[in-house]
Length: 141
Image (cartoon, rainbow, N blue to C red; front, top):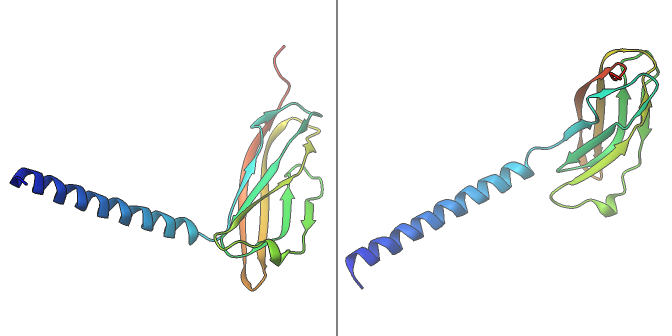
């Protein structure tokens, strides 16, 4: 085997080790992030029209126990209380989604805030907030 072939093999080996290390770090980073939540919806709607608002929550340790959504329009917050099913808990976390359809009666800009609480099944309790701004105004016709 020539010297340049040996150098190429050493270089490929080093590159392979580097990629393996990056993959391991990325996997560890994704699994150690704990609780994350997002508010998913359209950014604009018309007054009186129903807008689909979905809360997506992922926890690497526990399961969602409570979701509260404040629509910021004077209506009472929507709340879902859940009893975690420890039998479905997986080692690397689980994403759960919750739908909260809502109608904004008046024009304006509203900052929808979701508060998600997780824990149970031996996991520590965590809480996180996520927001989304929704503009409510008539469409141009």
